Length: 519
Image 1: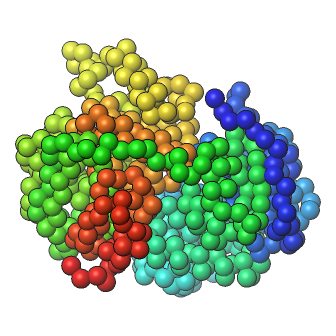
Image 2: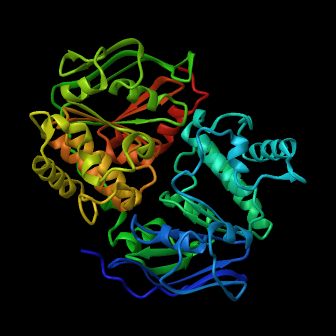
């Protein structure tokens, strides 16, 4: 049942500054569902407003309305105090309102330059000014401190680099209000630092920024003001200088921060997943070694966290364990049986399941329903005489929907109709339906809110209690220390430390992950 919506908390500070863009009594109804309920929201000149809430709280819906992607059912948008209606995102951009969407909207078959100037090419009369566009792209990437060539195909870039291209595209427009929906979800710590510097430069130039992030520390660090949405309504609003993360969590989900992590079994059993001397080449550059002689053992009932910065080799290692990449050397055993020569499907049948980092590209098929996405890896369990048994599928999916706490209208709903957190739960549920002996998760909480994170951690702990071996990668130190029995740190393709979370500090984890550390 949804939490009760309380009256918004009064704001004692931070009301100074001219209101550039405002939402007044905005409601949005989809069928019988109220996505927004009478929302008031102010954007002040030269300030950063953090909009915070669980997946499904209404954040993205409100931002789509402000950016001209959606129209409100009722309510008014004010620009410089005057009512305005944005007929389209292009219309919003013409009025100075631009958005960086949570899910990337780039064309992988086009170059960085073509993506940044898509549908708004600069011309000298009738001829596209390719040289001018190129110079502009080079300046944008230099500003973001990312040496990406304008000619590079977007499909050849990493997820983090694609995110920076999306940001560069928004920065290339004449913007008064910049909406950033989860802009840091795929960025490294160094890239986040650069982005924050750029945001501060923008606010000094009187650009207003709406910042949405599930990384609450980022909101506290960057924003001037925080607004909390819950169940489509504003439930709290306060100047950031007068609040803390505990206040945000309490207003977001009605729980204290220390209740987000589940107790772990703490009594490991026999070895289940054994990685010995694993070496992996970069899939995009076979001459570069990204995982070098790595050995990890995960026992039954144990949760092992792998922490590392971007480029540490975590994803390449996990994808090799799952069979997506080919190992240069080493062995992978599951329950004492070698699986490194098996295909992905054979490894799933043997009892290994992977929840990938990029749910949109690698974990889900957007044209399929919730049920079909969740059952894809478990077809042998629901196939009768070569045909899928819809009855068996419905039963298993219904069980996992309850188990993973997926919020959906029905099993038949398109996966794209779900919030990011619920899509991620479907990805994890798909892995769990295979009844794995070893569950491998790559950044399982990327881009989801603290409530959905708590649900994911609970699922991991529950599987461990049932005897599964859990191996997960994370770029958040707090997750590594709170959600794991044991923490392994990687840097430059090597293991640089192994820690017991009970007597380890964040500083020790960060020191071991420093790319300048010796190995």
